[in-house]
Image (tube, rainbow, N blue to C red):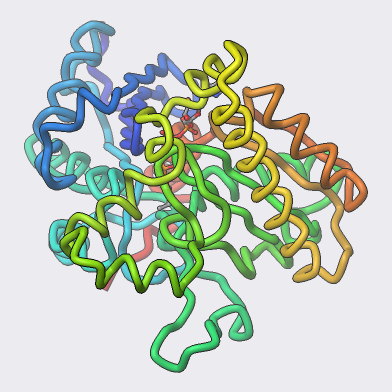
Length: 358
Ligand SMILES: Nc1ncnc2c1ncn2[C@@H]1O[C@H](COP(=O)(O)OP(=O)(O)O)[C@@H](O)[C@H]1O
Ligand SMILES: CCCC(=O)OP(=O)(O)O
């Protein structure tokens, strides 16, 4: 095997999976998704406690695929809950790693991406990058107002995949991304619903705290009942944060984050599973309706993507409610590994300069 150092390792830690790919320039050599059940991750208290477990998995996959570490030119990880920033490729630096370890903007598996990439890259004396992290913030000023002076709405979303599929859909319509008006919905372990205008995500439900519920998140909750729960003595602060961030949604009803399992329960006649699945589609459709008003009804396409976009039941249910707004395009799964690799490649090839996180 040649050791030309032209390969890019892409690592995408998600809430319920670690996705790994190696690219030779822009050609994929392999992709692999390692899914994590609730049981796999329940012994880890904090996200950073999962670091070694996930890194070992990555190294094991590289070994299985006969990829020598010395053949890597760069490593690119999914960017986590950093400061609000513009989209693009960022070189991983010490400040970024420290911010992610402190998890000041919250705990999420994506916080591991830059750190895994950086530690591995440092050992190999090569570069580490992130691309379009979850904290990409392109919201318009009006979208930031919450209605309470103490609280500002923030942008946390599946920016990487949504921007990639938005570009793809715009191209298929013969438009530039910057010219298209799209509502892109990522249906993953978290759910993001974003209106895209002038090449920017001008609003989004914060996928950790607002909008529709998801496999492991509550989404927006009735504020008065939540406040009551906070002061009920039933949960500590940390427990409640954990429930809201990773033990809500499907998990709170059925103890699983796997949409396929919930569908299986519904098919077997479980009425609660049926209604919760219907409610997910209902809430997503409602959020799409709200974002259509952000674009003043001028919507070229609604795009459904992410793991749950594989589900015919959920997709059909959403489509029947929103197709009056615009044609709906379904792009199941995600383009995240490719977007990561190509983002790093643009820097390696000198087509773009890496942004600096400061
Ligand atoms: N074929 C499928 N049908 C229905 N749901 C699916 C399918 N494949 C994956 N999913 C669901 O997609 C969700 C994960 O989506 P994904 O985009 O991979 O998210 P993440 O990267 O956040 O873990 C899980 O709830 C999983 O059960
Ligand atoms: C915090 C936004 C990104 C997100 O929710 O990702 P997952 O669906 O992988 O949890």
